[in-house]
Length: 366
Image 1 (cartoon, one colour):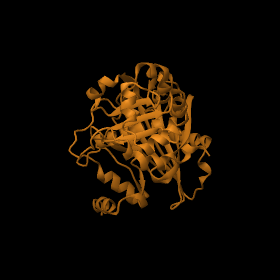
Image 2 (cartoon, one colour; image 1 turned 180 degrees about the vertical axis):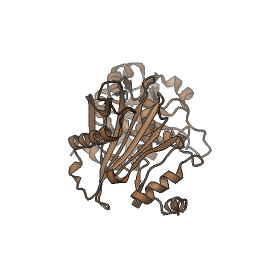
Image 3 (cartoon, one colour; image 1 turned 90 degrees about the vertical axis):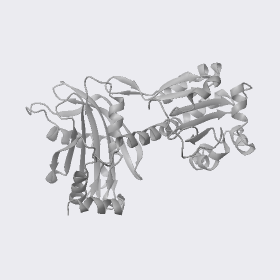
Image 4 (tube, rainbow, N blue to C red; image 1 turned 30 degrees about the vertical axis):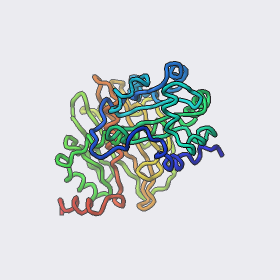
């Protein structure tokens, strides 16, 4: 098995060995800048040789339906490091064979054990959180030479991109969550009636609650040009047989044809043929399939992006479909669909809800 198989465990054990500066303290100010910016500190020649790979991994294109990059890369020289230390996302890229000022800077901060691991190509990525600012990720990518570094980045592309997506979602949820304006009565009702909960922002409405169909629709900004839709559907007494791409698409189309209809009932939502992908993910500790794609009205009058998570809950013998989509024809949609995605990830079965939280919610409706 490739040595990278144990990297996740190994990485956490050796993170502290890469010391880029004094330890962070909890009095730090929050990291600044846009969520979708990654500043790359690299020597000029190294960056231009690696630029294609970095763009392929971190500048991955998503369709909303406009093509948009997940992250925008901004290359900086080593001399610029001080000026970007407070930014949210930073990559420091170098090699052991580099004799540049940046190369020496990185090597001097690898102790002998870590240096040996890099030389043997046993590890190449070192993450440091909250290094110079709160809620910041500084990722150092280092290998014996550029050829090996390029191979490593391509091989581990999902993991590397996932680090930045995860911390971006964490920051975004903190900005979205507001206990004062949270619609706890709706959360409590769903928890009591159906045995699950999801964070409900103040401006979301409970648009449909159809117990006979195991369907709930949360809707924001109704009849505007920036709507956000979330539905939760579940199948009782189920088996994991629905955990495949075709079944997920079929179930989604059935639900949206029935419930996502125009006001005159003449058109309904369906999955567009142009773009759809399904990947395996960890959804709050459960194996799940994440589906991303485009929806459209069946009369071709409009459309937009959607993201969904499907998983089997062994305790309740249920298959859950947690789905989010947006209708925002006048806007770029990447940031909006990310906000919906973050809300989806707040979904919990009753067994996952903190007992104190559960008690507080149910007290509101008892």
